[in-house]
Image 1 (cartoon, helix red, strand yellow):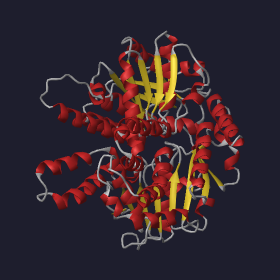
Image 2 (cartoon, one colour; image 1 turned 45 degrees about the vertical axis):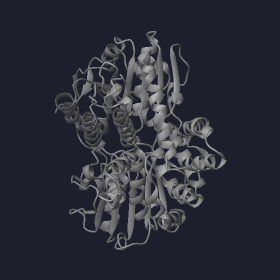
Image 3 (cartoon, rainbow, N blue to C red; image 1 turned 30 degrees about the vertical axis):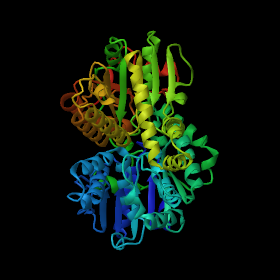
Length: 595
């Protein structure tokens, strides 16, 4: 593997959700550790599953991986980091300042921006020379999906610039005094990130047009902030031998090869590796040891029993129930790469085809709704919550309202304050609430960002709800907050999308638990791109289909109140006709394998 040659101290694995960043990062950690190097594997994804891959609990402290000498891991827990950050700020004034003042500070520090700052503090601490990292030869960062990661990697420079220029009245949900103390740490982080001898970015993709386009955009955005030492890894490529004599496998093989042949020009100069699709789930040490082994024999050479027919609930059945309401919010959630954008578009297209008014939108910075739809339709409008556009809209609104009452000096301070990187989080929240209000008049189908980023958005929604309730008190005035709308099953239906694989199902179950703690009950699960529900005879794909069976059973009998299974399609689901095929009335004689 070229990306492992002359390994630097810092590796960043990034890319579109679901492309295999965590598996490749973990496999790289194992390989370097087995070569005698001391390795620290760090997840900066708010929805980390590194612990699931190794089958142990890791959490927010450095934990040795007992099965792999020399390998340790750390999952930066945004909530734990935020609490520690709040304690550092509030602790010294508790008992000194009046209780109501302390409560006010705590409320200011309850938002998503504080969570981001706190996680960012932990991230930068790992990029500088310190006692915390001195014992490690390599530090590997398994990052959140692309949009969130670009923001994380931009933050050292953004916060350094903000602190250099001074700050205003700290409108970003909490005092920034803690940041001032970290000025030198952020500068050191900027230097480490831009040093090609110390840092390498591994851009992970699948052999899919949309994933490769996103990687190209990521390459250019990271290069623009000085991160140019990049390698491309295309993961899960179906081998030619697995496509022989099988229509579905042949279609997938040709689709992937066409995507690789048409790779964006921006990626041509990057060193490139390809990792073949494996028959096994990438969980456990043995699987990780085989992932980067190019000599590993494929399962298509192993005998697999023929598939047996079975029936399963379809997406059409869910859409029928959704359409009966006439309006409402449909939120499509799940781990990155499970097909949220495609399924959100499929639901929206089917509702619009029935003559219902639909607004299809996304809060995912890396979503490709227009590319998925590929056309315009009657009764359907499409939008995207663009963080940059929403930030500018929010800044202008604040300047036009609050700024209009200030003198020149006050306005200058306000403008400086609005240049804080936290402003983006507030602006996105305002856009989110503005869009979901439309659901009282029409259908709003929202394709959400991957799990961790969405949970941070819901945290902001919860903080807003608590502050509104506190201000209203016993006034007797009726009010409805966005959180109350999300909690009302008559107004909001949450679809949890997963693949029939161990990690996506576990993560969807974890997301369901998080939502329930927030008073939001998921309405249905959708198992996407199922090989067990497809017609295939390829030994490699049949082996993967057999692995799916237990996961489908777990969703059907343990996790979901209602569910649907969407098979892997031979034709890529792009355009209205192909999207409607995902919700056709029947998947009779779906193919699976015996348990």
